[in-house]
Length: 131
Image (cartoon, rainbow, N blue to C red; front, top):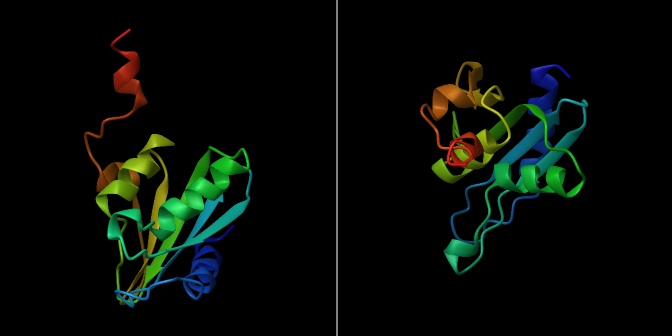
C-alpha cells in the first residue's frame, strides 16, 4: 500500500478518537508485511495512566489477530508532525527495527524509521543475550 493511502486511513481512524480531557485526537494505520491494515485511535480515560495511544491500539489489534510483522505505521494528530510517544516507540521497536514511521507534516508526509526515533533501543534481543 502506498504511504499516502495509509495516511488517509489514519486520518479516518482519528475521527473515532475518544478524547474528552485533552481534545487532542490521534489516528494510526498499521501496515503489516501481509499487506493488512489495522487502525487505532487514542482513548483517554479519567485515570490518565489507563489511556491508550492510537499507535498501540493499532498494534494491539494486529497482535490480537495474529499479525506481528509490520512494514509501516502512519500517524496523524491534531497538530503537524505528531510523532509517537516514548512508550509507543518502545512497543513499535518490539516488532522490528526496520518499521517505517509516517507522520503528517506541515509540508506533506514525513517518513522516518523506528531505528532513527529510538536509537540504541532495548529489545528482546538483549534478553536473549542473557541466556
